[in-house]
Length: 212
Image (cartoon, one colour):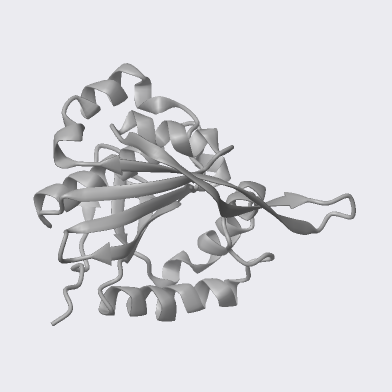
């Protein structure tokens, strides 16, 4: 029998993480049309509300039901405004391992939301779900995402050469593919020691809010 992640809510001092719902449609579509999202991810551009609807009502439920992962909306605790998304995917239930990625809306960057949401998700995985490994993959030039990984305690394990496709603007304004390296990071339960103190010392870790 395939294991699945529960439909859960996670709270931090400033954020709430929960499954995406149809109320997130406008904010999700706006977020995914950002230049940084287009550059570092394979999200179709332009990203429409219909695309957001398919993500929320079809893709995300199918991924969870199949045991591959879960997509969590990241919201401001006080306003309930959508500030980002944390994704878990490529989950291996036998070895209790999953891959994490994250994105923060352009207007919410610079507040340390990416590291706060990623750390809260990691604590939930290692605690309630008894996972033993979280993996992150960041494009070689995506220093912002790499800094989030470092701040929550991830260890760089090496480079997958020429394994990543990013996107760059051409002179006519369209996007074109460009190959680059993936940097592989891992986080184990013991790596979380001191992570809260590091985030507090850096005041939330600044503007490190792009999806890897």
